[in-house]
Image (cartoon, rainbow, N blue to C red; front, side, top):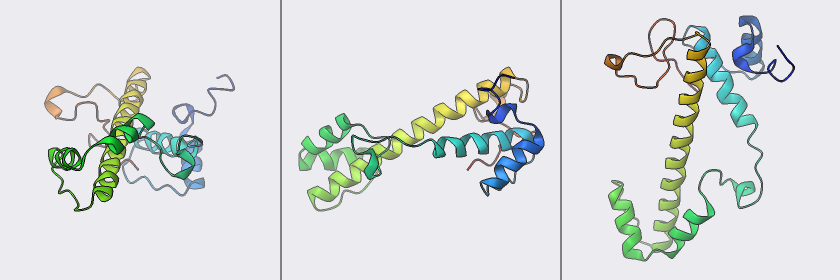
Length: 155
C-alpha cells in the first residue's frame, strides 16, 4: 500500500477498522466487514465537511445558490404548488413557504448525495470482492448487503 491508500477504510484490517470506529464512538450493529467500512466512510465524509463561503458557514451544505434564487423569486402561488407537488401542506405565510421549500430542496440534495455515495462505495466493495452483486430479485438494487445477507445498518 502507498501512503495515500493507507488511510482508506476499505484497506484497514479488522482491528484497525474497529479501532477507528471506537475512536469515533460509532457502534455498528450489523455484523460483517462491509457494514463497518460503510459506517467509517460515512463518518469520514462528515469530518471532511469544511466547505466555506456561499452560505456554507451558516449551515447550508447541499442547496445551491441557484436553487435559493429560484425559490426566492417564486410567487406565493408557485411556492404553494411546489410544496403541494411534493405532498406537503404549505404554511400560511410566504416567508414560511420559502423556508419550507428550501428545506425540501436541501433534503432532496442530501438524499441524492447519499445515494451516489452508497452506489460508489458498493461498486468499490464489489471490485474488491468484499461483497457480491445484489440479485435483481432481492429488491435491494444498489443497497449493500452484510455478510449475513441483510442490509447493513448505516449511520
